[in-house]
Image 1 (tube, rainbow, N blue to C red):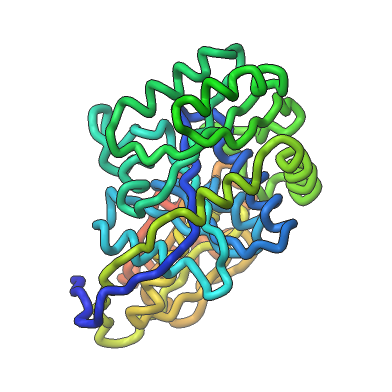
Image 2: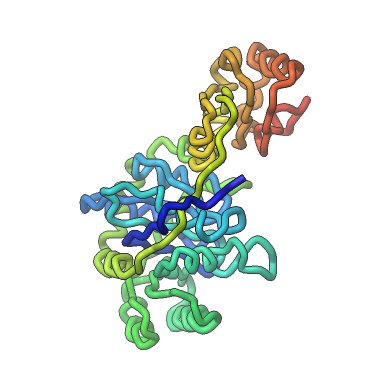
Length: 354
């Protein structure tokens, strides 16, 4: 299905950082959003990425930057393909790329594997790592956590540290201990109880549900600027070595296929590179809304019912009988369909709401 191009190996200098943490809930997404907004205020052209199979965090990145955010997942793509996808997310103007990690730094696709982990991605992309340590209830013990991560693997790539939920007094007291480990102390974020993002069963709520997201982001950037050393982070990113990869040649469809993709408030879980892939192999991608429209786009040959939160909109989806009948008729006529997560729930006879 995939062949390496005969073109020469590509090489590019891309300033970049991975933002990792010891565990989920450390504040990675909030701090990543704040950093994106703070660097953007400085006029720096950015690209952002999310490690692993996560839909919601990239949506927050995209809302901050006004640009698509891509996923990078070494469980699904080999090293060359991962590097190529990363490089394709850049433009000639990009000055800094931030990659938000997933779960804990070494946590992968299984309980005892690093496959698909932030650690594996950092090594594949040969990227400096800034460890975000949730230091609530700690002072000097936060340094012990850092030291443990530095010693656990030889090629840890950890070059800097940011402390979340830490006071200025504690940060200044432990900073010499951090620097004695040969690590760049890049600042701290105080406890921001009023800035915590709301969550539900699949993670954070979708950004479209937050009416004050722009104000929130601006305020968060101001807080980040006060206590985080942006210059230190930029210096670490600019120290990343050149990245090399082999371009990949994709197969082409024998003819163009009309692919209709569900996209609205209820169905919003999409990977940017999957859509790009479909277009590159010759598919015609068009979006439709099961919530707001009455029928599938004309000529639909492939139906992609994406994930999301249909249980939050169950009454309205159920009431849109014209769309449901349109989809049922298309399925009975034998069109191809991929329904995942919430898209699959939409095809069932019943579902439970919240």
